[in-house]
Image 1 (tube, helix red, strand yellow):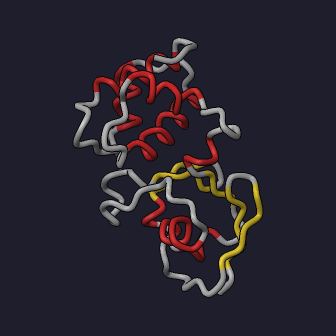
Image 2 (tube, rainbow, N blue to C red; image 1 turned 180 degrees about the vertical axis):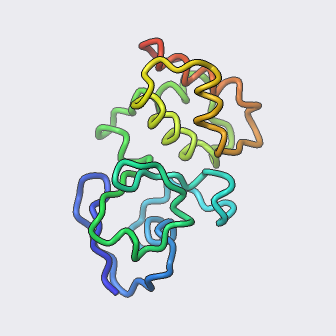
Length: 155
């Protein structure tokens, strides 16, 4: 099938897509958007989190056919050209990025939280990021990055 989807504000097409192929596979392998990471392929780690019609989803669990005619925003789409989104910049500044595998999903999850709750409590931050696993950072710098954006700046 031909998949027609709007990605990061631009209409895109992918040909010869099997309806059961994951959205993550289409993004990474067919459309050249490697930001979302492929780790568990079971929706357990959060590294592939993207927005689908403004709702965060694990792209590994979304069949490509489900994205037909819909809007997808990836971690690449959060930046404005060469200017990082405040959440992205804060992750860099706070040292919340180590191996980077979890970072795209955490950034999208934090971005979503801060859009819904501009000044979240630590409990709200932890709850919003609970579906994202990180094996390197110990999480404190990630929390620092989110707190910094909530306070109106970057870490």
